[in-house]
Image (cartoon, rainbow, N blue to C red; front, side, top):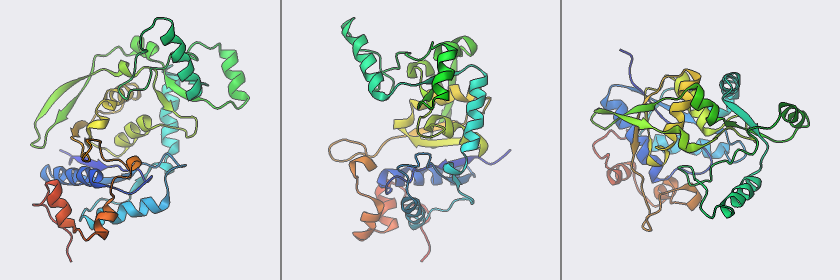
Length: 298
């Protein structure tokens, strides 16, 4: 049997905090426990926000914690052609359509639909309103004209077409820290016509992550509970693209005293700041429940 393959996949759009440290250390712990391999992937498709100095800081922070990973590190920004190939497969299968709507136009269309029946418009698991389908049935001639004119557009999954093409049912297997597995039902339809290729970059988180996991042979995905709902959508993409579905483990999130999850956007205290205060890797590991694991030699 092949070795299990785990991966830790941060984005270089800010400094790592304790939540990242927990996820990285858990991936390392489980890779060791199951006799597997640990990969590091840099998820930098958002080229406008990702910065080289943050990528360098990721390597420094993880090495300071005592983590080791296989080389070379996969950087998503170097593999847009892989994601384009996957997108072209989606397009050939009739699974996507172009969308010319801005966020403001989507919000306006949803607001109009909420006023008429007097009830809230359905939301996706992230709380965003489901796309109302404004561009779903545009005439082919209009689509070609607008694309030829250079109008910015994204590409969305056509969930109506996919229900007919691949009705399911869908599911995946999750595992716990002892290796026990159980089946989990998935409901990708609750995401509506989700964006799989953005206007600003030729992919999306959802598309790139399933492509990367398959190309890298990832067998065990360990990530936070905030991405658990996204797994439903990833399972659907894996089915359309003919890719394997890994085992999944979604761990709890670290939260601040107010109960909010730690996040770069909230300027949660970074590992670099904790290091500057004098905390050691051993102290971080003990704080996060990994005191018995190896630490870097001095």
